[in-house]
Image 1: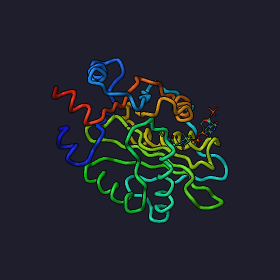
Image 2 (image 1 turned 180 degrees about the horizontal axis):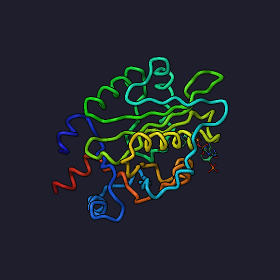
Image 3 (image 1 turned 180 degrees about the vertical axis):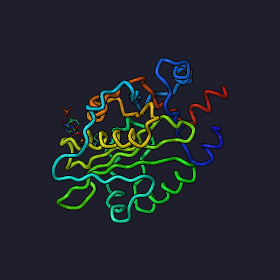
Image 4 (image 1 turned 120 degrees about the vertical axis):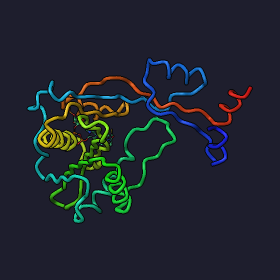
Length: 229
Ligand SMILES: CC(C)(COP(=O)(O)OP(=O)(O)OC[C@H]1O[C@@H](n2cnc3c(N)ncnc32)[C@H](O)[C@@H]1OP(=O)(O)O)[C@@H](O)C(=O)NCCC(=O)NCCS
């Protein structure tokens, strides 16, 4: 794999989501991989959670809109702009850079997910005064795991943070998911280990940290030299 990556101009190889404490992590470290990101993998078992902890709305001055699979035309431009705030997510020192979201990218992503039979749900908070999307949360349901929802992006634009929007959006999402999917067992999310605000929101909803996952990286030249000497 390494020569092919080098041919394509890549200089660093990363491995995502190695579980801390398992043999794969030790193996990578022995090969000289360094940790570039640490993630808290959090989980909620729906049957065990007191659902009254889940907020049913967002703060005054905002309204909730939600959809499955396809963003309404009226909101898609503002939704795409808000999704680009995902650049504020703490990412450690990984080489991965989240995309710039545009309407075209949103539509391409929706088409890709529906082509793979992935159900996507989105809840947004619209700022009433401006009509703009101030925050969003997105989840996916993969066909191979019909009882588990995986959290995708959650972002609140910087000017609107700290008002309970993130918590409200996730609460609305959780209620909606269990209403439509009574068979739902688990909700999963991963968050940078130092993303204290997101972790606090997740804990308030009833999620707990299940394990630590690591992103590890190595320079391709140095790894090639190590493996060929
Ligand atoms: C994480 C994020 C979505 C939280 O949204 P939010 O609407 O600001 O969060 P909430 O207001 O619902 O509350 C979260 C908690 O963190 C606190 N908080 C949130 N943002 C804060 C800030 N900028 N400064 C200080 N405290 C903050 C809130 O007071 C609340 O604490 P509490 O438990 O004492 O009530 C938002 O900070 C964000 O978009 N960050 C950048 C993107 C990101 O990291 N996304 C997560 C990817 S996994």
